[in-house]
Amino acid sequence: MSKNKLEKFAEMANFKNVIQPENPEYTLENYVLRGKWCKEFFGNNNPLTLELGCGKGEYTIGLSKLNKDINYIGVDIKGARIWRGAKTAIENNISNAGFLRTRIDMIKNYFGENEVSEIWITFPDPQPKKQNKRLTSAQFLNMYRLICKDDAIINLKTDSRLMHFYTRALLKANNIEPLMATDNLYENENISDVLKIRTFYESMFLNEGKKITYLRFKISKNKEIIEIPKFEEEF
Image (cartoon, rainbow, N blue to C red; front, side):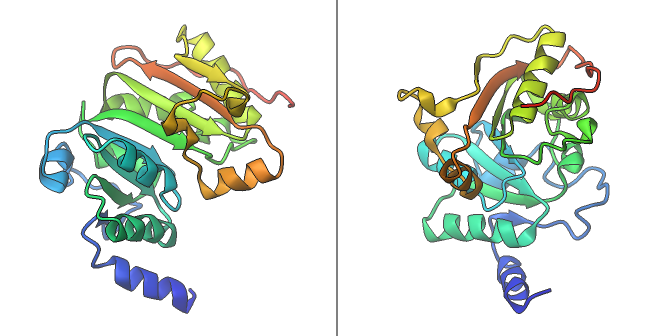
């Protein structure tokens, strides 16, 4: 591990806006903040939104600046990445943004039933050969149902057309009508400010001439998501 990473980890250990369970990859039953994030971590009763695979936290920070009455938590397993987002929040006195270091497939151990109102998934690994590991697969969507309020909003922003159209096919098979779906987000000049937030990777992809896709939809607590057959269309 590089000296720079070690220095970041040492500094982040004192950040009050970062939660780092000692064993982030292991199951923790009845985690102390589970079901109590807003009241005990943020000190309010505002709605809670997660960014899954937050990287350096650009979206978590951007959203928290736009919506002061919503609490945001960026989730990622990479500590050096989380350090940047947490440091930015501290430097800008942002009190409604926090970070949790854990694997995304472990989030049901850290958040309680009906605790989350909205989820953002920004530029995730499209997992071209492992459909069930995509963060919008039926496996993951059903996991989100365990911690989300009924009709919670899921947002997917990605450069991967495979990820985008796979998710649209999954929704169609489950009779879920998207609230918004576009395979070229920036062809519309009137997009909302929340969609104009750009991560490091998004800026890089745009410079490479790639189109950015966006999908927004709801999931119901009472309706299980069924997986579709292997989806490997070429784009």
